[in-house]
Length: 108
Image (cartoon, rainbow, N blue to C red):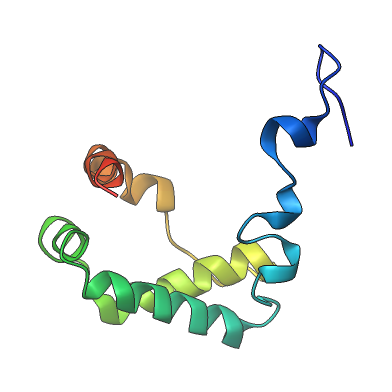
């Protein structure tokens, strides 16, 4: 346990992080491409049917899911597993949509 400048224990400030959702014991095992595939497809399956988020992907970004999902899987495999199969340009593709994301995030 650490303390802040005033000497207050950090767990008293932010709580015990081991109890938070997503703490190490609650995280999915993403050590294989198959596991990453399953997580990405299940996550975006929820997006496709979400009344608020689906229009952002379908109408604003005009996402072609047949190419976007494999790109997302390659991207997350690259981030989590290391082999560079992903060849996209995330920062060049997404900035134009960024202002709209904040509008939707505040509605959640």
